[in-house]
Length: 436
Image (tube, rainbow, N blue to C red; front, top):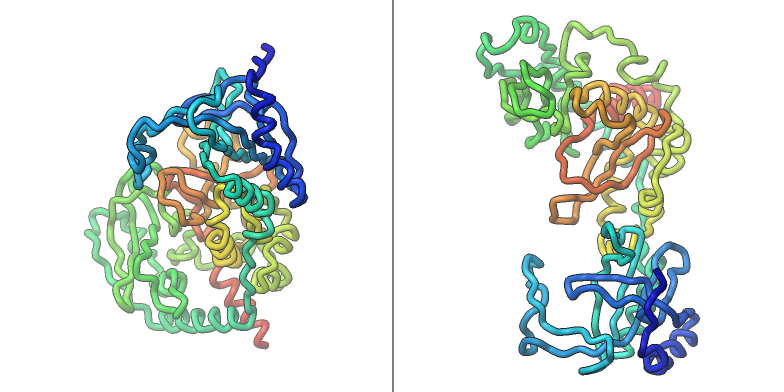
């Protein structure tokens, strides 16, 4: 279907001529023409509307500027979006025939713009201003935001990291040498072999620690489930820290939501699996095999370590690893997200990611197994946004190749850390040989 002509095209071009000339002086090319159709809470723009278009210099985004008439429907200061962003009251009418007060209307698009079914319009919240300089400032900030709002990835100190690991290993060995474990469980609720085969020393050694080497207080480690599905709440044999002791009990938990789920790694807590070889525990023939990768991780050369292990990353994670914002809309979160990546990914074992994803897929319930293989599963959250669908780093596979992606999800399901992080005893082996 052909677009309807803009009856006010020439008038709009005249009103935007000064703005276009000033942008040209700044080295920003703005082309006058028909705009991409958009909509927001104020409604849809008419087809064929004209204005200025500025394309993002190094990405898929664009900014559009046109002129409209506005007429207030409520007194100044009333209406619009509420401070908590939960309610909206129409505060003005937008008049594309240029009646009322003339104002600039600005819209921004990026690769996350939503397209509704059955229409060629894109969702883009518009901004209205009477100030031409405000329009120029907005375009200048948007046009160069990738460089101007770039974060500096933190520099990691390998010596400091190894010293911290050494303190943690010493604390683990001390706890394993004199394990303090209490049973707070009715024996009738647990199979006899599970209690009989509990390896107190291994539990104390592998239990998660804080950066000072103490037991992590808020952590729960789940060991085995009893007559419950992974995605449903049910009884699990679980371990928590109580001061310098560990307490084992039965807790009603949703297994797939647990960061520390060890039902697939019994050598971490069961005497029956003490002799599990490195090929199974670490997915390695020996510790030295992976030292070059661990050195890269400790130095903060995360992209190099991932590439060396054949792990792909999507464009958003690649941008964040280099310090760049993923989009103009989310640029203010860049510092936090970059720091979060450099806090979490040095602890990963990229050579284990493909095997970890296979374990997760094998455990999915029959209904979920009908979905395509390779679906993403969360590793950790990026934090910073208080909304239902939160930004996360997830692991997926494509034709068996592991790939880390930045994803958005409201699900609490996650891949257990013991499947994708560097094993504690591997770090201990590397520290020992390094000291030697």
